[in-house]
Length: 489
Image 1: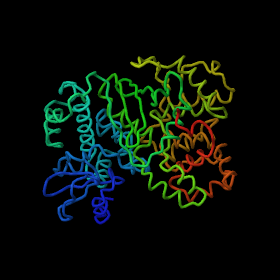
Image 2: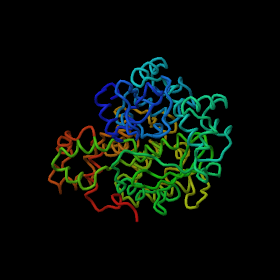
Image 3: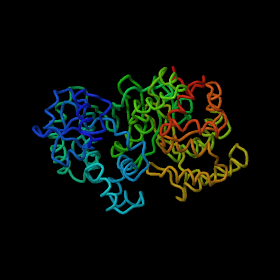
Image 4: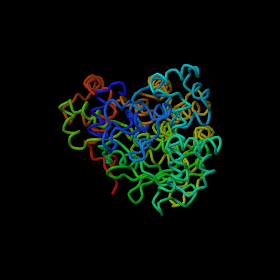
């Protein structure tokens, strides 16, 4: 979008928050870059240039605006609605792969050369993987400076910097303030005091309807791993350097996020995974406008706009749970999952009590006795085949997965039909166009609304909803009185 100067100018003049994260405005006369909704008086058009990323602005020598704090914008919805090389690379960078494995590791995961990845990112985002990862480290450092009382040296390494000098130089360059100055700007009493306990706000593009989003997560919560308590969805997190516990509370203009981490280096990854689970980088206006064009869906969209697709923090975990949920009720699926957690999950300590385990890893599940599973023999075979493939690496599910390829691999496994493959594509891999024409709830809703109820005819009818059929699924599900559609009381 940053190449469409007239459209960018209109967004800046109207201070349209919908475009925050889509592009950034760099002001030539001040050397500052802002989000489109920055509250200051817009500069003259001749003094504005537009960049596709904060990293590109920083590469060009601009510093972040202290008023609108552009680094806190929602992420671009492009990276969660596309499956090409750049989108997959951006999802991996947000997941901290460059910091942990370097650019060669990023390229290896994508199946391209490091040079090709660099070239593609530079062409579309104006910055390479190292610059993009550096911008993310700067944002993590600012979060830790402003929300904790940790020593600066500890913050530097927790944010992923190789040295304290690099940390100091980067913070000064990006924010035009020293780390100490950043902390001094925080109102007295607002900084946290306990190591590993963080409270922050997760922004999103309005509107956001929390009913089906949190309702789904709460209704399917696995005891010991997830719970709904005091208006918050809480769960344990398996992270690269350790584990964590997160509590997410919906508010009208943000999601309150409270994180307890065993290793602060996991902060950016934990935030990225929580945002992805709640689909916070979506563009609900674009989605709803497309679906509203269908006269059957229009009343559903108008009644409760801004529905998101509830996703996951762990793709392998969701795939296992999808198999456990085949042809059984939500309650039965939770019971099966809870037994696995008790027997094979890794115990963790929850400072607030209530959560007890991480969901079992594929490696732990691969060693269990199939006869201990209280399910039909054919589903046991499906389960053991899946966890075996996940454990030995012959099947990988991650943010970098190619959606059509993974769907084809899943359908080749015994016991995997279109419903299981598509629900994994929708909720684990994040495919915004995944569709469930064989789902009982979808077929029932289709019949009540006068849509075709057979899978083939409904799929043909849903072609007009592309590329947002996963969101259409949420609106169709919402016609039912199932608990997944209601925010818990």
